Length: 184
Image 1 (cartoon, rainbow, N blue to C red):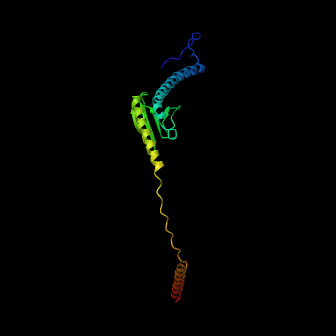
Image 2: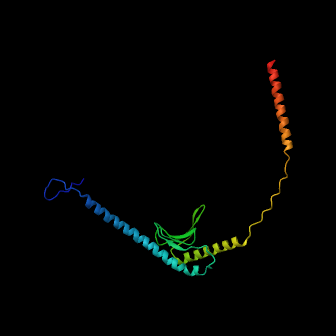
Image 3: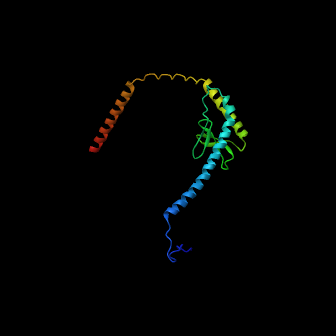
């Protein structure tokens, strides 16, 4: 174990640890760590902005009447370049690889992954084309007309009443017979 530090004036007495000094050292260490994290996040955002600029020609070709796509970079713990509501690009673990993912009801699937910006632009182009075709199909195909349900003929309420009356009378008759046999 280490010996407690001693002050120069009283050799033998431990020097009091100042909380203020410890807090200052802790804050300096936290700032150093935070600076590294902020630098990494800024680098991620910069790479996503480069990709966003590379996607400008693609989205310039999308007609204005098609409002499926809402492209933008979100700033958060994990910066993302959103293509639409369910698809976005995020940086991989090494912070140099682009990962194009889509959220589905079964979980997140990776559509493309590459270090090359051109490969991701091509994957996004294919995705945008598929989404536009899906939209065209949804807009063109009319819903199938449903056959009108055939009306059920109105049933008479007389026969169920008669059946219930006969069943009740038979039950009362059977109860009366049982009561008579027990009394003997």
